[in-house]
Length: 374
Image 1 (cartoon, helix red, strand yellow):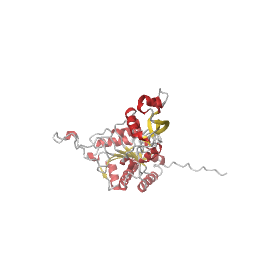
Image 2 (cartoon, one colour):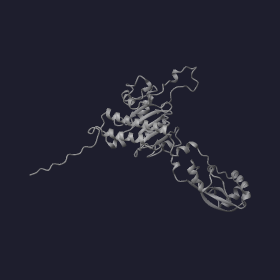
Image 3 (cartoon, helix red, strand yellow):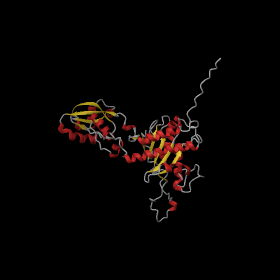
Image 4 (cartoon, rainbow, N blue to C red):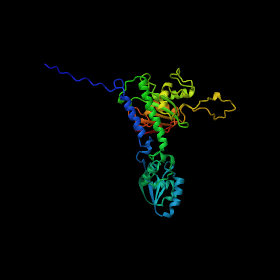
């Protein structure tokens, strides 16, 4: 009698049981980033993508074109359109009079004109309602679309036009940004090895996160970090990275006992630094020397001292995954200038997936956000 032997249960592919599996995933990501031909994509306010917001207005068709100049002067004086300054008031023989909600309580636009600009009561042949753009166009492409509806005033912003062009970064800049993102993956690789973590493919793309903070003025890596949420729910990679930057400025509250005696390098573990340097020989590591106000004599201090930045002021942050709300707000308070991330965070992402926190106008600091590495 033969005994049926069941096939062995397949083990999940984890770092623990397949030594090079996670390495291969990270190698593939780094290779794809290195070889990408795409420019990076800015994450902009929805104002740049949403359909044209419209408002209903009354338009008067003037009887005699010779009266156009006088009519507009009187309308601008008696019925100013402060919220529609982006619109030209005249289009051929048509003149914008006012939004339709201006005449609430009156029987007609004719009555409204007679009450507010009596001199123009016989100027118009007839009236009609039209939809016109409620807000001004921000870029040329919007201007072209807005203009099809009603003539607009527009002064292009050179920086914004470049930002939406699809070619914002020059090739040399792109290479730098890609290199720093590669380093973020190498940081993850090192910690996965160093901490002997069981990591599968889903973890690489959806769970693990590393941060690299760069001073663009010196093109130097100031600090790095790896996600430690399992041990402490506050220790997301961005939070740790900010704390590591603080260590370079005589601060920091987490793991201060093993700080490098060279403060400029205290944002990076010495062992990790020794791992990264031979892999990226052309990359600089370390912060600018921090000089506090206390170290500057009263003669030298003139209200604009040459001390180091406040936390991450002017720095760039490179993250494997889009940060959550907590991390994004921490990066706002740390005064980061730009954030770059590789993977969307579909469940908790605060800069693209769930919200665009950096586009909230009421915040007291704003940074730019870029993605599209893969």
